[in-house]
Image (cartoon, rainbow, N blue to C red; front, top):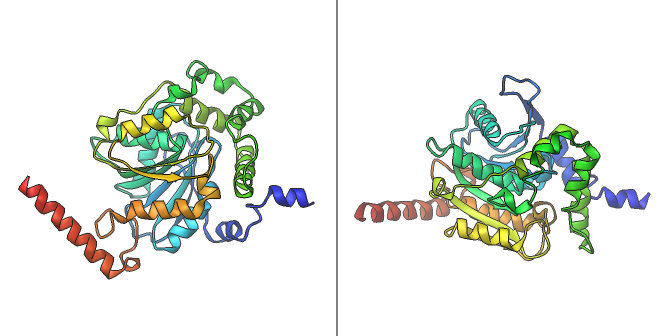
Length: 317
């Protein structure tokens, strides 16, 4: 009995149970194909038109960001955590996501993407660059080129593989060897989430993760970016991280000493702090993700001064 309890440490935690009992799961269809269902949690003030939206990794569901949803909405931010339907093609995903934002009546948004979620966030920003829908990006343990996985040649055959084989491929990227208890809990929770995904959900995500594609940075050079990564073992190679730094030379960097593949679960306090720091630059603007009443008057004044100084220097140049 003790071992089962240990395996379900996060699932039985008061925070997770509070999240499940207070934030309703919504299901939304925006495509002609009614089998394509977006699942999402939407917390915080609904009058905010530029929320932060969380996009999960291959193995994740909308629940994996529950600690961000609880903390950030508690501080006055509007937070949406979602789970994608089955899309086999990046352009198809981008079209579906644009329709979802239209349905939710959101003009521009801030995106936090973990691993595949970060890649999809970049591609969406790139595809919509002529009529921008993304105001800023936080890219957690993410990548800009799918060729790093050396799987582009198998990308077209994932749809044929049985679910157990797909799960084995995903589990192969999870941390091996000794990890601290919080990281072990995070891995157990992600394994549980992985088990909840069906064959087509997994196969389509792996296809998006591995089909030959890369980000064109010149199309999204004006977007504020924070790159969040860990210094300990994760599925991302050192080369992939370096490539991200090169691609976004002006990005803010949020380094976590440890956290593995899922820092938003096992290092949530640090991750939440970095998200706050990233979003703070938009306080007092129409793209603030936070309710104005929740921002101190002093902070708003500082922000307005910075904005007027910036516009003056722009006018002079």
